[in-house]
Every structure is written in C-alpha cells, then in structure tokens.
Image 1 (spheres, helix red, strand yellow):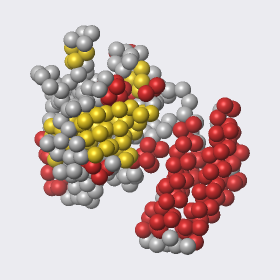
Image 2 (tube, one colour):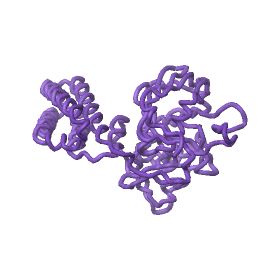
Image 3 (cartoon, rainbow, N blue to C red):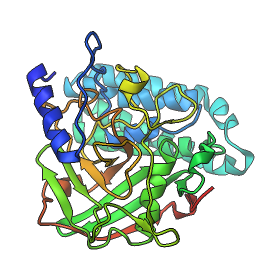
Image 4 (tube, one colour):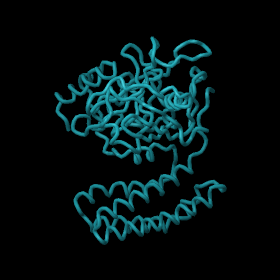
Length: 359
C-alpha cells in the first residue's frame, strides 16, 4: 500500500491533470478497500448484470488460481481444476436451465468447448507448464464470459427521464482507436454507465474524435483527449447549438441503478468500490470540470494505472469520475502516447445496435 504522502501526491497530480480538485477524505473516514481484480476482462465479466451462480463459481475459481500460480503450488492448482471439472459435469443441467430456449444450442456448444478447455488446463497443471496453464485459463474464462453474456436479459433499470434527450448505450460496444502510436481496442459498458458510454459511442459514430490530439499526458496517471477545435469545451449539438452535457454516472455493487451527479463523498460511501473501478491500465474515464459534476461533454481520459502509486481501490478517482470501459488490446500503446500524438480514427466494430440516440 502506498503511504499517505504518496496518495496525497497522486491526488494532487490527478487533480492537476483532470481539472478537478480531489476532496480530502473526511476525518474518521477510511479510504476504500483495495480491489484485487485488475484484469479488464475479469472486471467486465464481473460487471455483467446476470445471476449465474454455477458459471460464476467456475469463473471465480479459475480467476483465483493466480495466487497459487505465482507461488507454483501445482498440487493446489491440480485440485482446483479437478473441482472445476466436477462442478461443470455435476451442474451442467442446472447451468443450461438458465438459458433461454433460443440460446440452448449455443449454450450447449459453449459448455462442450469449456469442457475441452478445462481438460487442457488440467494437462497444463499436471505438466507444471505455466504458459500452457495461462493460455488454457484465458480460453476457459473467455468461454465462460461469452456464456454469461448470453444470460443478460432486458436492460436492468430505467434511466431517469430528466436525461431523455441524451444518447444511451443499452448493452456493450467494442471500439477501435487508431492513434499515431498504434491501435487500441476498448470495450465500453452501457450496462453500468449507459449515458456515459452512450455519449462516447455516439461521438465515435459521428467521427467526432477523428484527428483530435491528446491534450494532457501525465506518466502513470492519465492521458486525456476529446477537446474539439474552437471555443467550445465539448460537443455542440447542431440541432440546439448547445454543448451537450453528460451527468456523472456511477454504479455501486448491490444497487439497482447508477447514482447521478453524486460522488462517493456526497453519498457517504467512502469505502465503496464501483462496479467499474479505475483498477487497471486503460480504464476509460469521463472528464468534467472542477465546478460541476454534470458538465462533461466529450473529453475522456485513459487511466494509466500504476500499482504502487495508484493502487486499485485507493486511487482517489473511484467515486469522483465515471469509468465506462476498458482497453482490452493495445495497452502498451498507451505508454507511448503523449501530447504530440492524436487519435487518427475511432470506429465502433461491435455493438453499434445497442446505441439509442435518445429515450
């Protein structure tokens, strides 16, 4: 854990970078608990609005093998994989019963695929082959995630009517960004940040970000872009000639809908961790000014996670900004980008059908 002095310095740098002074922690209030999940794919799996206890148990068992793998506890890894295989076999009918009839064949195929991948995982554990184990685990977790995504039903909550004019992403989308340093692929999550993700995907579809420079770059902290040419600080709606404003939007685990225009301090939730935490390199965050929580428009930032300086759950960004997605490919490009670089092209490559221009 970083010392209080380091945390304070991180907060100051982030405030300078994002144009928002970070409020001090009130006396007697502890900082949030650290979030051990730092893998973007795992965060996205955990953020799906589904109830799939058997699949999620399999998922978490495999994710939790990281500690044993680092310690080379191969006996424990063998045991975990065997229990996972037994769970899949014994609860297969229960798992399949949760899928809609139209998804039954696809679900069967995914479980067949998962069975093969668990066999490969077992072989990697028995051979004590770390790389083979990691590869098989990655494939198995991707299959579980695909199955869990099939279980998502209707959009899980109603967006407040005061935001009816804003676009919303009712699901997820995948966006590719070509920059002067290389390509990035990000998954944008509308299940937990529909207005923020919707504003972003809408602007990507409008090619708003094409050619825009990175305006701020702080090593290990943030990389920010989305400021258009001209006097406006965001996207101007051609129909109204007004800058479109997007509220602060944060979902907390256990809540039925996001909180709008309230920080964790406002809510008295000092120990909370959002469903979409700033916990990994390439977390996408929506920028707003230091005067208002609801005046974000088009500027966004990539959080440049550094474990020692901005530990997950202790970064002082969670609960003050809306995270709305994660870079899942090309993270190394983020470490090369600076204020002399720009976005060349941004495109939605999957999930565009989930965008609605307004309510």
